[in-house]
Length: 423
Image 1 (spheres, rainbow, N blue to C red):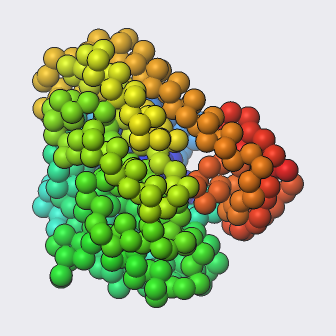
Image 2: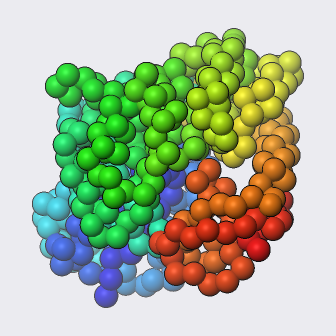
Image 3: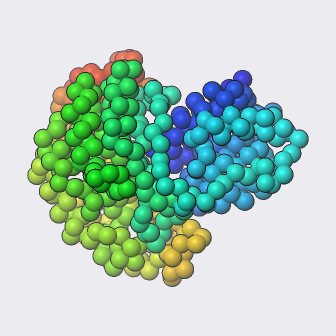
């Protein structure tokens, strides 16, 4: 009997799913499936519900526990599903004590639970601290993730995530460094720092250290670490130490994923973003000056309320003007309770059409990057399924089997439009 975790959404959820798996297994819970949900779009919630129904059909007798951001923001949606045994909010899902306490409740779940017992979702805004959870690695992943920050103090008009994650809070630097050292001692070659708003790291900690200082401390105190990555950042919050580390720390990987969201200044203002179009372009230009070869990914929303054709065109043009390579495109999804949901909406089909055009622009940019890599010699981190990643996070199809979790040198022979092909 086992503890299985099905993960939706971001890298932070991937990390937290491993914490959940370990905590539930250590509590002696058996034959459960934990669905760790995402709330960023209505489609993500729909997919989670669909998955729950499918799992209930395929794993008769297994108890289904639902947690994550969608469970936090709309718990009643999942409480009302007969397939679900317990709904758990984000505050409790990582607590070993909680899972130990729920063991007996889960055993009784097949007989039906009262709503009060079935739902354990507290006020996430009341949470003031975040703890570092020890994970030796993540099942199926060649790299390890470390949650250094959680929550968000900003209130972008389209975003429901602060109501699922709470306000920003950070893990002390010493604990992060110790966990990186522990992972390296267990054989980890690449570590990814992750969080909800990682560039707000340090607010609330003594001395308010910034993300750049954390990066410096990790690389200084864990010299055996081969590779360090940072997940999605807000460019307007990038501090001087972080830029200096990008410039002179070769073990900090040359890949940044930017939370851009749009390329038109009026839309950015209506989104309540803090950067401008010119600021985004200037940031990518400056980072490339500091670190030639830096590759950028970005989140961009298509069809935000009030978006005109000209506004959309400026967003699409940003792909080239910022030199974006790995694009993550979202058709705008109205989330109940957010200010953007009350703004004049772009028709759904038009949102989808614009998202398709953005993805096409992203695919063309990726092909240009892949073309530029042919003939290059790269050090890649091997993953499962014959895939590896370059330092710039570009996927590579290997020509021969290599065990996951190794760093090897390869020559790039060609590409298939989506990934590089090793000789």
